[in-house]
Image 1: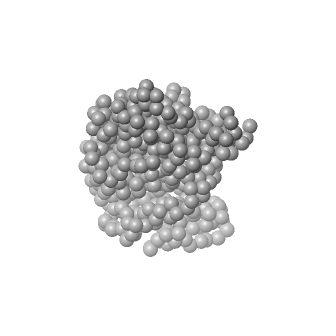
Image 2 (image 1 turned 90 degrees about the vertical axis):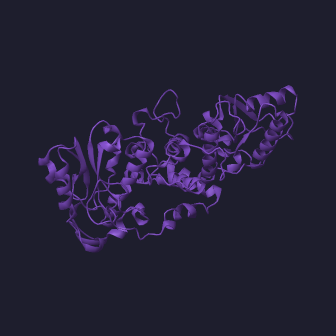
Image 3 (image 1 turned 180 degrees about the vertical axis):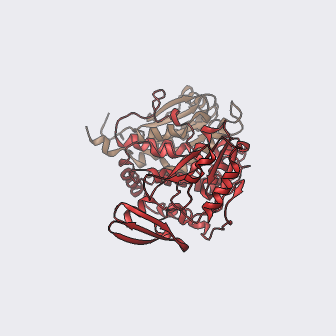
Length: 143
Length: 318
């Protein structure tokens, strides 16, 4: 890699199996260009995403976390994303209290057909995390 | 005297319940300790004064199948309401003996005032005056100076639920805005300052788990995910990220459930402000859903339920 290219950061994405994972797949099949910083973890439903997953990721080396599920009212399990919405909003408000920029965490709703929207979301979110830089500077310097 | 009337009230309950949870004198003059009474002969052990700091309701979920009478202060009664909201106790099996409370003491603050001299005698006078006798002389303290922080902003001095109320009800003279004043002040700091603050505080943690064990709402106890090997949430390594993670587990498992009894901070041997994170979440729950834990038995904790259209949650933009 050339020195000019920005160094890759670690972004973790929790995607629900039924909508957002399908949306990411659609983006891939359509050969949309996407940044490569994101590591996708497929979960059965956004309701499966414990806020602790996100905290654990951020405390252990991730620079940003993205959570995406089905649009409200479209959940495969009827109400998983409704519970997720409350939990994730609670976490979003707690992170700045801990001293972690809330911009490093983003949650949204993307359906399986929205490949272009997925591409847009990943590109924008990655750009935002790159603007903030790495979260764990000290650890990266130490051998 | 309140303790005399308390003994009378409890004497009438014996026979109807399997066990009575109250306070007795501890190992020295400065400490009270919980006592489990099963026979009327034990009633003389019972005491009531500002040394009775413990939240006795924490024993209730493990005694769910028994009939239990429990002595509660205003703050402790919120735990009972929260248990009712979450279905963790059978209300008909619990006899609540409520005592309106003017504030308790913080043992640590008293020891600090008396330079950790052994306490020979402690007497509680009128208007919150406390006379402490030590080998190196006497000292008069004011209850307002040595009470835990929670008493300074107490909104519920009279128990919210009780079957027997011993003493006259008290209404709080503290402003409701003062409850979360310290949280709002903390939010004025910059992100870096906040992260530094928490890293400094959590770095002192020795992971004794006393905060978890004392917490009345930590009902998983032996199945706590901080100690399970599968899933292996945190390792035994003594480094900051593990300590930080443990406190995050505690805070997030109490999200919208913490009744702010302050037991976690009281038992912490390292003086970490453990309750602060939970109170921050409570403040958010109040702003988002108008919910306050442990106040109304008909309520449902906000993260146990949802609205299809959330008016207060706005969609975020990147």
